[in-house]
Length: 370
Image 1: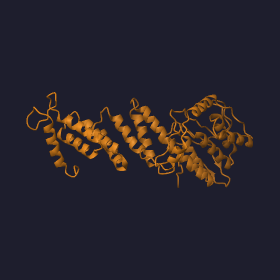
Image 2 (image 1 turned 90 degrees about the vertical axis):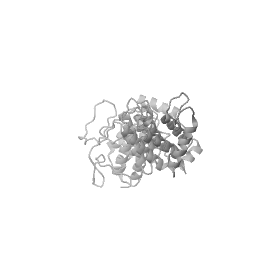
Image 3 (image 1 turned 135 degrees about the vertical axis):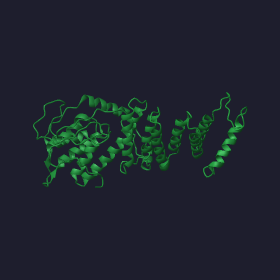
């Protein structure tokens, strides 16, 4: 009823305020200390309404403050509170309106100390709408873009650590989706498409399943009869993921192909042991519940940044800083997509078994469903 008849509400509101305090002139709102601060009272009442779930009423109070007291010190806070009310209300329509309100806040108050908070909430409107990796990635990519914007625009904000963690979780979802497509294309024997999607996933340095991506890249190259390149990726699994479930199979592949088996990187081994100790085990009921949840599972996302895996020419050269074996001139590195952390994949031109020229690191990456 209130939202249908705002004039009636304003009348009731005025009468309420006039009856709350005494000692002033008729119609004047007096606080206990004798100072007339109707804008403050409006702001605090709006906060109370929103806290009690009366979002429409609270927004009407805040809007009344904005319209009635254009010079009030509560203008900025009231504008932000309107956006927060939509964010708290949630739902697709609420989050969509919240983003628009936060954008308006940034426009009207470009020097506000709350800009970082507004940008964080903009990113979270997309984060809350992310779908599982095998579904539409539109919201995940939008969240990735907004969290990156936050980190770039507010590097000194106390919220930057939180933003980085959210970004890792978003990129975990995107990388899982790319890996899933890569495995699907591999089964379909679309090896170029499988390589391109796996190469996209490997560019997320903090991806928890980096070992599996490297193994898929090795399988693709082996199927393409590029033995040296296959050994390169299998060797990376052995060297940098010594506790991986794919480590043993990668060793067998190297032995079968007659290629050298690299030594385990001690830093990577220590990191892997720490990961095992800190791994969070989800209960059977928890895993079952995730099957019916619309939200993606980000529990495996890293809790800290990892150094980037610097991929070079696909050749047997697994010693960092060591001399590279002779190899054809590599093609230009693939352009790193938005959200990556400085990883390059440089490959040699090759011919697939059927005679078709293959350049899996071309700039045009194949997308799922293409």
